[in-house]
Length: 180
Image (cartoon, rainbow, N blue to C red; front, side):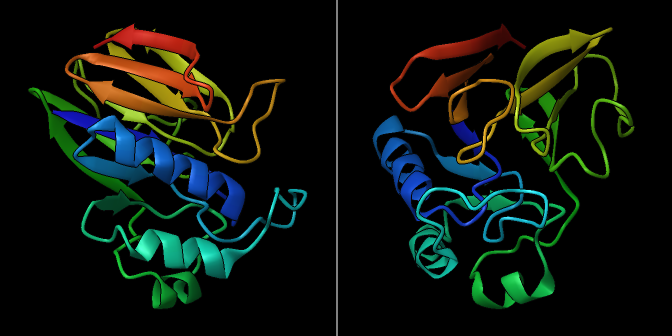
């Protein structure tokens, strides 16, 4: 089983297209979007090729393959045009016997963990930084940002393949990796 994780598209048609190209070629069964899908937000600059209507049209074509959660820039208006559910603050995934909390990061994140047991993983976005580390007996994972990365990082996404979570740039370079 293989899942692709992406966060913080922020309405960039350019990076949404790149993300979907990777998804199509990856063999991943699902694309998990960790929020901030269409809108760039008042604190962010406009991302490259900002075109939320193009992004929603592209993503709606994959509605049966997407699991999504709400980011702090996502609204009910966004849900009206997206054809897959995206208003939940988190989703629980069971993957190869591991419980994964998928969330944006503005409600639950590194500073405020959801209820987790040893070996569970929190996968979140929001901070626009790639993370693949442990916190005690739990895993903290972040695919970085598809369109507005921070900290000098390139635009990125992640794959969970078997028990390995790997963050990649769009040239296929590994940024971070951890075995769950």
